[in-house]
Length: 442
Image (cartoon, rainbow, N blue to C red; front, side, top):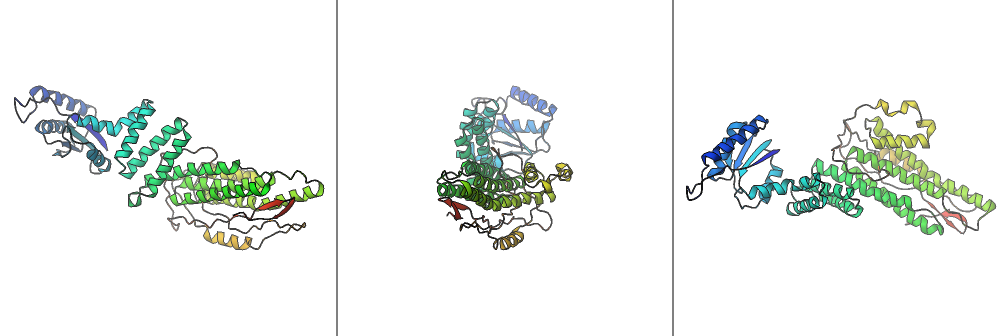
């Protein structure tokens, strides 16, 4: 909605007339303003005034020049010293008018303008500290409507990010996720979009923390920490599917795949026992490779979920990243000219196919697969359903929640609420005095 605020024209004094109508000069000044607004193409579908005569007269002169229809009404709450909160909240939820003029008095109009636009004006002039103060006042005074509050928290998050204050940046993102999660029937597509992208940024921090953990001696200790961080990352990425935002889902899928691949690589690159040499070391390394394989295989399968989305018509940076990773991991299958992203074209909808049936088949087939090393140790089984949520992709590096809505629009036959697979992992191994044995850290 376009909003125009206008103070009434010059009025008589109470001594001259207790009703305080406009003076001739006041009428002439209002007429000039109205004519200039008309020349600039301003049109209003409604005009509200305080009910005082001088404001009503101003409103009628204004509507004569720029009104789409002769709609002039008095509205309570526009008097000089009325609180601006109720009017601000009403303006945020009004759907009746496309453009509206409020004719009133100072200091009310000044306070209302300050509340509505002060933060944006400060931000545009790079006065970020003042902008943050104005935005904080707004979300404190007006936690509803929910969408306006979430938008304001998003603006605050962007300012903190620009100021490189990672702690406060993540704090605002967490608040966006919390507000959207508790919104109930007040939740909108816009709040869901901003919350989904905020949750992705937060989940990326878990991914980065997981990647940072290397498998060092003592092996059991670092393996347990690595496994816990992997589980936390996979859980966070899986929950992103609920937002049903195409690029968020694809990003989470990418990150889940990379989390499994990182675990596989960590096993292969883990620190060897200092006293292990010769044949024992060779056997140990062979067992490490064998234990790492199920995680690499799972990474490939999860990246391939993004390929399913790609063929269903979902093309974004995350599906393209999964394609690039598959070309590196399985070059014979994916490093081909025909897999170029050029054939995708313009995409305007998201199709999600429930992967539960396929996941169940994979889990049943994998549950019987196990390999036993010759030296008495057992390499973990590959039992565990490959996560097949059609695309949850964390990104490398910080993701900024986009302000553009990309809510998913399931195609015919597709579920409107994506199903989340039961995520299980291949069982990692542990090293104990040079022997590779089965271990399942809790």
